[in-house]
Length: 106
Image 1 (cartoon, rainbow, N blue to C red):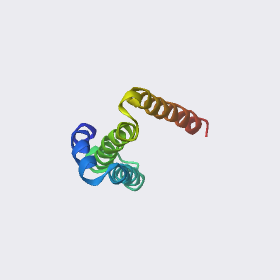
Image 2 (image 1 turned 60 degrees about the horizontal axis):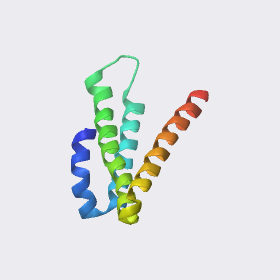
Image 3 (image 1 turned 135 degrees about the horizontal axis):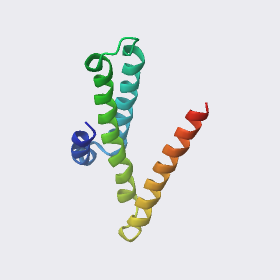
Image 4 (image 1 turned 90 degrees about the vertical axis):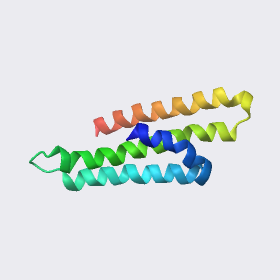
């Protein structure tokens, strides 16, 4: 789903704007987590419990990441795009690492 929505994200960003696409992606991701919270039970059932949440979270990630990258491309002049893109990707990776570490400690 991430790859499918990633290919559509560029067109959607051009039509609806970066903020709308990022918000839609974040909403889909949150919906996937909610599906997991309410569907997964003691008896595992991949198709009914895990797959719907994975489809939603994958689509959400596929919409959010290109939106974040597009912000650097749209907001910065062309000679600074490389540095802006590197900074956004570094911040994303640090956020993932620190968020995972904090969640693991909790």
